[in-house]
Length: 170
Image (cartoon, rainbow, N blue to C red; front, side, top):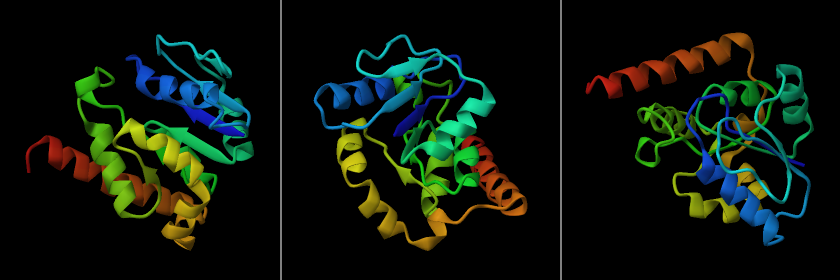
């Protein structure tokens, strides 16, 4: 199963939702997919979806999923805590998906730490999903280790600090 979550940010993330739906339509993705689509205007035609789901359902879907695809926000930490390596597509300001590019900076920081598989061009999502297992092997063992509370907080604080400095122009 593939679980996709776009979080709860009030701007649509149609770019990601449409891309996944298209891969299902073309039968590139042949396993079950569930999309938590948030405020996205596009409603998937080829898989089950919901605007929002309860936290308990989110955790369950993350645990059950073979692949988790997410935005570059807070959901990433929950996925990492579950010992999963998410495919992260940051919301971008230029597409009207966020007010700034903080998700881009956060994604780059986690990519540097070999914790995620980042996609900066939505056209790469097909190949990334097809080759997910190979990408996991490239990242190595650190990527699939469950993070303890101290490590999660430390990683989050470091990434957040880097984003703040970047946004402040330092």
